[in-house]
Length: 447
Image (cartoon, rainbow, N blue to C red; front, top):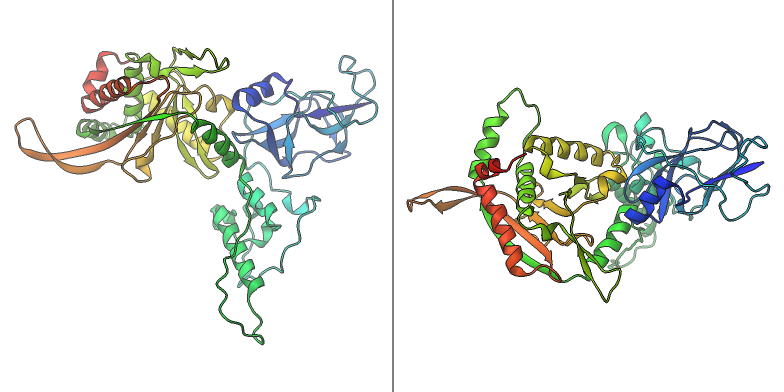
């Protein structure tokens, strides 16, 4: 008899991913099986990319793969069948799979909770049978570059870009590690191809063409999720509050600890900010709450005890916000170690839904890229966010009226003005500034 495996939100783990994170569709990165192959129970069927993380789908059946319903790089809505598996009659009596394939899914598949390696195998993009739009004649490369094993690998966002332009990944010379194809490589290839296709024939000289050349590029999964989240967020009235902090004392502490061989963790400015925000939240717990509008006529605040502080991260696939769980119970070194772990996973696309869900307030450190002030946009499930600017040296007056060197950092807060008034936001900002400027104060309540 035939069993059918699909992306069904009846699976307990997928229920967490789809309902709590708002996942409605995923992209197939690669199949681990092919039609006619034998599959064992709980062995991986395929690897997928959602707008949050990379993971595997495993098979709850043992049998022979009869049909794959989707190709590599296809986008699959939740609730659709992935494949048909021929299983031994009577082996799974409780599942009652249909004898003939039907359009709707009949059996759910549990999802493996361990994130798969995003670079586990070479892409099968070049072998995909999915029809693609005809492309202009390819541009002859000036020089044939030997392709390494990694040359056919790319993150899902780049795969989608390749597919939208009808480009074989092997035609593009990658500038990444070991020849890996990056987004800029694809865009340069498209620009060169379009330029060659639109160039006038030498025998038919024409006047200078000033018309704009445009091409349509679909949003990546992370961009799609950001589009939905920010559209929803900007329906919330934002209250903006800016301040500046003198961070000389924290810089001195960091310089002393940098020479301590007993602690290998690199200590940046950010863990101090995260800890200061957590300690301030104990005095202003409303900033750790969320607004419940499930009943529009009776909105209410949901107070949350744990401080799960989100950290905005710039990754190869876009901006993501994993969060550090229960910051109040962590030391500054523990916070630094967790930031390092999340950053490493973010760079390789291996963050799990658990890393990305449950945040209560966010810190966005734009200073490591550049910029002084920012107007950060709220996450819809939070009521406050802090943007941290770049540190800079400026002359300041000390208590004796003498001009000294001050290392200053600007803090930019945004709050949900439906429930947070300006005075509360200012008091919260002042308390964080006090803790940053006099870090010894954090020792009084440090866990």
